[in-house]
Image 1 (cartoon, rainbow, N blue to C red):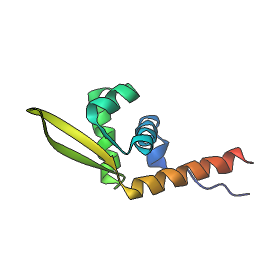
Image 2: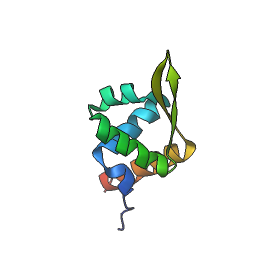
Image 3: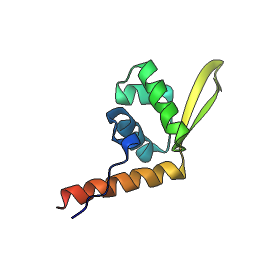
Length: 95
């Protein structure tokens, strides 16, 4: 039996944690994701950019109460990629 390959972009522990959080919450911000994933600011920033480049999330830069604010929203392509990843994992588990 042939297994479906796991999406290498989502297979990274931090990116998988980010996407799991985004699936549950749909919207977040940098500070909230940093606390939820316990990632460093630099690592989180790099991984968010990779997910954005793949079209999985939108990164929204702006200001909130006169402070810089980075919002994050999951895109439909991100939801689809995550669901495909979960289905691929289930394929391994169900064997």
